[in-house]
Length: 108
Image (cartoon, rainbow, N blue to C red; front, top):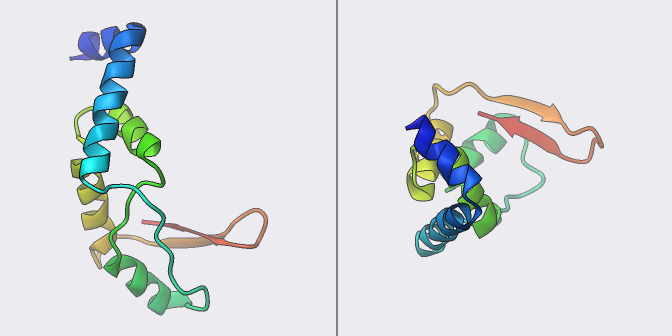
């Protein structure tokens, strides 16, 4: 499998084809787009709201990139797996302010 992945990365035309196919899958599955929530939410209420949202990639190119990076998953499967992890009450959550201090970085 590693040889196949390496060959795909070295062959530029094949890489473009793979990313294009992944992008089409992401577009059909509606796996990209920004999700916004109320900015005045805090603590447990904020985390609960995030867990109830469907998390997607920021753009079709981001979805295609992640599908290539996580080659064992199609973009839809990767996003569904991420959503299942975020949605789990047992998942660990960390909240940190960004370097600029104007946003929160929330990791699950």
